Length: 252
Image 1 (tube, rainbow, N blue to C red):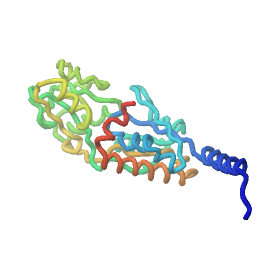
Image 2 (cartoon, rainbow, N blue to C red):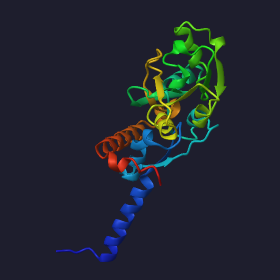
Image 3 (cartoon, rainbow, N blue to C red):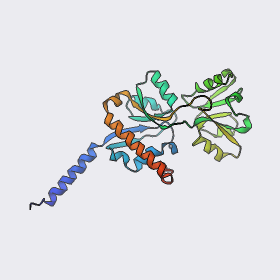
Image 4 (tube, rainbow, N blue to C red):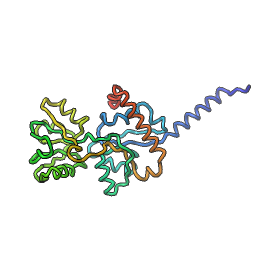
């Protein structure tokens, strides 16, 4: 019986390991907001090496105000990203070479935060108020107001970032945000009764956190896209099944 020399075994396994390392496709993911629970599935897929198991080395980029996340993906500076459905649809309609791959959330948690002492309960209560909006969303409030038969000129738009204290200090009456993070933060920061109106309740049902890529990348790298989406889906499934572990996975 022939045996293989230990040095040859080391060489064979070393070569195999090297090939596996070199085979990882390097891609990056550009989020459209700051790290929090809405990205738990992506962070979990990274933390649990699910991307690596599917042949990917994924860099999770950071977000800051002023980040042109759509352009980063369109220009292939990042290969994947997330965006609200209305933002992505508008970008594609304006000629951005982007394609949707799937949605993380079937229903959007996006909407407007307010303090109940403002008297706001529906869009009809928004006349003569100051509305805080994020980039890409200035057109949404006029749309909501028109559906409520309110003159958009009666509302003062204020471009904001994510300073919830502006609402608490009374500098604005409404603040665009997510029910799953900003609204919870508002309730933590004040004892004032607070409310939240979703975009869906205002007449705009939509998917949320849509994963997208550039058209060129989609056409040239179907296997990479399939691997990324599969690993991301597994990351979300693990995060949902183990919420106690997912809550802190993005803190480090």
